[in-house]
Length: 116
Image 1 (cartoon, rainbow, N blue to C red):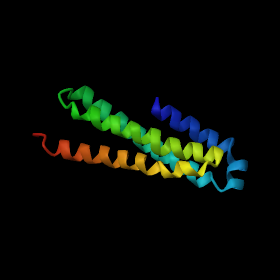
Image 2 (image 1 turned 90 degrees about the vertical axis):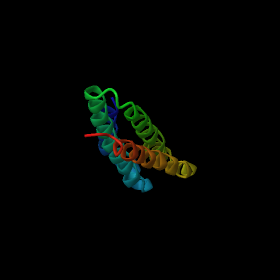
Image 3 (image 1 turned 120 degrees about the vertical axis):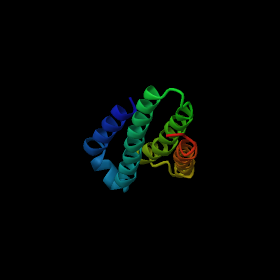
Image 4 (image 1 turned 45 degrees about the vertical axis):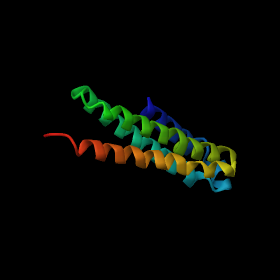
């Protein structure tokens, strides 16, 4: 679902927002939001497959939750900022970035303890 949304939102940005976004200087911000959204949607898909193969690795659920939170806050705030020009949303964007970093760190920290 997250991947589908990333593609749909990206297409909307490429075709529907270009004239207004370029005028506001927001197209790059929108593209950044779509990139991070899509990369993390793919990561969540890979983690979900891993969890299906090895359901005992319950830490993967926490990692996926942090990445979803990152998409919602990081990409979501940048989407709204790009569409509306509400600049204070840029202040919450780093919270989403911290959620991404925390998710990747939790994946590293938990996975390093696994036995081969």
